[in-house]
Image (tube, rainbow, N blue to C red; front, side):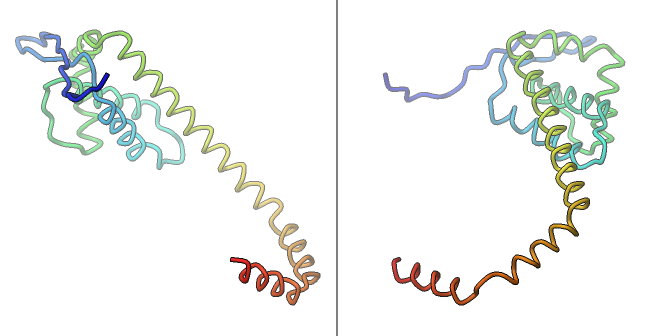
Length: 167
């Protein structure tokens, strides 16, 4: 089977927010999902401590803005947080999220949890590595210094020349 037409026909569900009709996509393209998580990383993962309320709010704001026809031009973090607060305080967020198919929403939540977990694991791993370097650094530098005295530089040059001639 050869597929030649990869145009998407994404269905939308209508949700009423007050007297306004909002279209909610039933599927979001993979590249747009990836952009949601990249934006979260850019806006939230540079901080010393992960600000969970901020990342949760931004995650929901990005879902709303990517899955609906709601337009909001600012991408400033504080404006996005105000946008989320507005949507949440008017109970609009739940209407929109409920209109996204369960399998699609659960996939997003899975990606979100995995992203947070990976970030936390990386941060702990990086901190542990730095702590170990700080703790054992002087000892390692002393051992490296001792080993470097025992290295026969002429032998290394000979091996390098032989290797160069082989290639």
